[in-house]
Length: 138
Image (cartoon, rainbow, N blue to C red):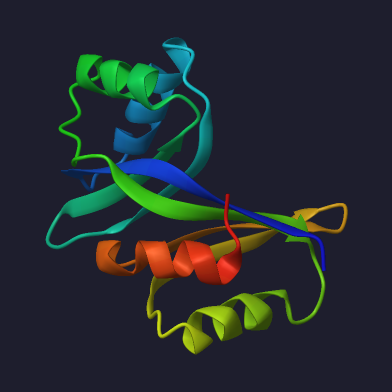
């Protein structure tokens, strides 16, 4: 199975959970020329949402986010997974992590069409080195 896994930087922000907030933030990033490798959003308590950003250029993203009024988390690390979409792709990745004693915090994966898939994987910071080694990540 042809799968590429690499360590990436990401940030998150807690924002108001209200109509238009995501559009406002993503539009501001777009206007600043920011390319996101990945993006995720989900509820984070009463009337709050957490937005996770995986920017192509972390420094440019951080500046644009500040200009958009976002209070970002400290820079964090995750794993970007891209590869050929086939049965068992996720099972293989989870199996390698389990064998290394690494617990998965979160995984979001989708079919990208044309026989490809992509995913964003998070593990605890203390387990990142083990995860990178177990998965042969770049």
